[in-house]
Length: 250
Image 1 (tube, rainbow, N blue to C red):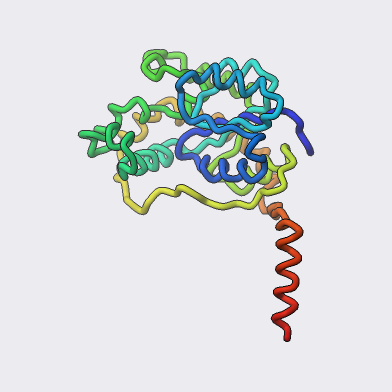
Image 2 (cartoon, one colour; image 1 turned 45 degrees about the horizontal axis):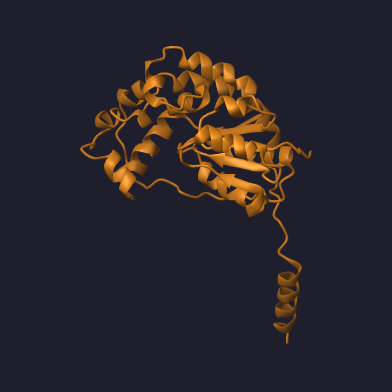
């Protein structure tokens, strides 16, 4: 099924979104897509991208903002079991791979310390409730209700736990040429201790995820085991490979 609508993919951190982002980059030309990973002038940048006819795909670490919700774009996201996502997020930040992570994780050495970061609390609810100001998000007792209501605005939802089926589903909706499943930006092997602290960090995300699985997961059943679409190499590459194979027979 081909869909001509502009795509907006909400990339929630540590939900296999990096792997899907690379798929987006393989299915849309560079001049057809834009990645937005900074919140500076976010609403303006989203509005400009939505209004630009050449842009077919917008993706990045941004919440479901009103400018997106009120547009005619097709909105998609991936969700992940909240405690696994939080542990992965904690491990990722703990690696301190850049200056931003170094600053965020200063004096943070345990999951209990991690709760001091607004980024650690109910991240999926934050993205789907549309909040840009995380301090305001933490003070609003109705955020879960807002996020659940916004399910109605999501055109397609996948799950990290059903990643291959999710990609097959997205690919059919959007007529992607490439739905080959690859895994990138995977967390390390470091073990994080279980404990009630993880559930406390995800008091909203746990019921949000349960509701999402009940509503969206059944759709993915039909796509389990689908053979991926793998694009053919350019004709010049195929010809070169043919002659290389032919010459190897002699």
